[in-house]
Length: 296
Image 1: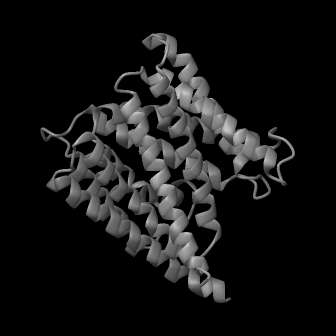
Image 2: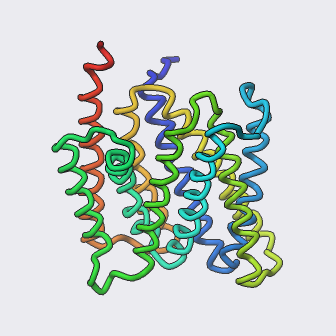
């Protein structure tokens, strides 16, 4: 049997990761049609947290989940971003087509690159800055401020994306010695507790067996997405693997059409195409700039 190359394995892991995350979103959207949102978040969070704790226990490098030194403060910021992004994303998801919300989230790599330049001193040349501006124009085409299609749910989706930027920038500051699963456990536990705290405000009811199974399946797909993303980042050439994160938009369009009968309109597809093209250009540009440093 022919052994797959490292780049091919990385691409497949990234596609699997995006499918896992999108299936999680799909199941959460389906479940929140009948079960209160915060109760749904708690049930999924319970399954995801327990699963991640088991994974942490099976990870040789993890001896404790306790945090010490600067990592404690950084994980606090990272967790805050996780909680806010989850709440805003799922509220928006209840009221928006899956593909439209996914299209907004495709601007994440652009926003992270811009935020890293503004807040962390990363050097961003005029070519990449131009690509960021073009990509953000694509986001405006998607959300269309002032148009009939624009509403507060689009802004919640945008707010969720910005909260993920906070989470990702904080992640970059974590100690290299800290295993990835440790901050993931804390983030998942915080989201679970957020659901538990918010559930009484909406009212709590006993979920049906189907709803329990859907939330636990969502938790399983969330963990699969997380683990596959880690594997994707550790094998192959990052500049070749990373663009496959945009397959999440294709999965969202397909699942939104099959399960909810919704398809993005022309402007949304146009805006998403601009965002994706800008993001891929930035990835390719970063690869070209990093090549001399790697050779040196």
